[in-house]
Amino acid sequence: MPSKRPTPGPGQESVWDYPRPPRLEPVSDRIRVVFNGVTIADTTDAYRVLETSHPPVYYIPPADIQDGVLDPARRTSHCEWKGRAAYFDVVVDGTRAKEAAWAYPTPTERFEDIADYVAFYPSKMEACYVGDEQAKAQEGDFYGGWLTSNIVGPFKGGPGTWGW
Image (tube, rainbow, N blue to C red; front, side):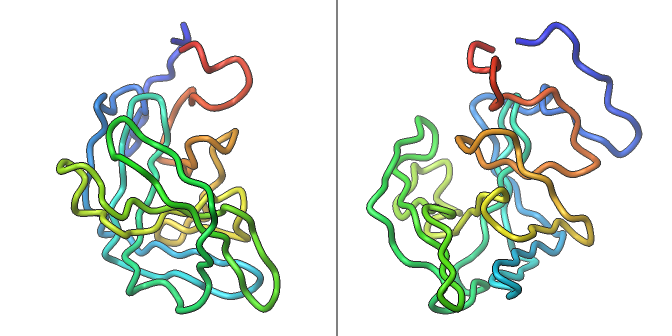
């Protein structure tokens, strides 16, 4: 764990105040994902997962993702909290981002509200928005968190942070 943690300012959240095990909560902000010049996801019915030391990860309902942009990939992984994840390539007009999104088809009971909802790595997308703010990618591609101005770290994921 890092020795210096900034104090959140007004309207900010510290990722060090997020719980472990993680918490799932609905999001009222508009969440958008843009890839290859096309808005491929647009919703006001997302969820976010909050976990100690990580920026939020946003999960978008499949009905709010453009048809045909998700191509199942072979990769799977296992989260101790959410269960087995399935990955997708994102494809728009012939441009492909490999393993750029994931979902939990049969998540654990605690996360059943996000069954088949899709999360996107902001580092592999052209832009990801929370409200009108363009999110930045969490360093590293293991967690896929979305950084916005109301979230303060330091954040796990970059070089030298795996032992926290």
